[in-house]
Image (tube, rainbow, N blue to C red; front, side, top):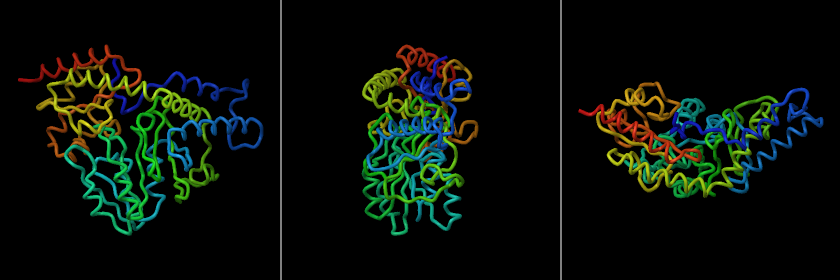
Length: 364
């Protein structure tokens, strides 16, 4: 099988696996302590978590704290529902942001979804027009999970701050790959998008930003996220972050080479989204009249996507592609190819041959 769905999840890095194994022990090795216990085993587990927290923070701006969560969805919910004031976001954001609308509005706060330009980047004029003194937070993706487009985050943050609002960056697809904006106030990240384990993420919160907790209980994570932390998951996340930092330039060069070749291999397809401001490891392409379900059935040995893994099987056209102005038919004729650190050029070429052949067989 050939895996080309790096936006959905990434293969676990060997370094992350090794870091986790130490903390998955039984009674014979003693590495199973509760990190919130005061005895020696608890302190050992706590030390491992703090070491991981430092590795993760090394890829984030200075002057903030890393709050561990169950994943980026919880991190985004904590940020949006835990702050004050109205919320603004964009039409191409992840459902973890957009589906917070009801909860935010139930608190008596406003929640407005702003348009994007036809290339998928934020409509800055619409943002500036929507900002008011009641705006509490502006949420924007760094790299879109479906089309790879990079928002102008510095400009978004500058406009939000001028109005007195906080800025929440969904950096799930960007963390460990590109530099993140120093003027963000909160940043949500996920381990399994950077070759770490599933089931853990984090919210970086700038010093001085106050949030109300979603989960109450033992008061862990500075009172913002109660619950016993998993030393194994934290250690795996930390190891993945360390490797991502050490390999950032190497990984970026590899992905760029793959992207250049992919554009050649799929030259007859339409690329969705901005061609310049994008993460090259995401190629969202369309071919008129394509039956994507049939294509995926005909190419069972190639793992690719028809959109966000979170919305797969819904039968609805991608809300991201519709926000770009694509018709329902065009959106449903699009596929997403994602590649990264462990993808080889040979795998990409073999997969492209299979996909192109299967697509051509559908054409009249």
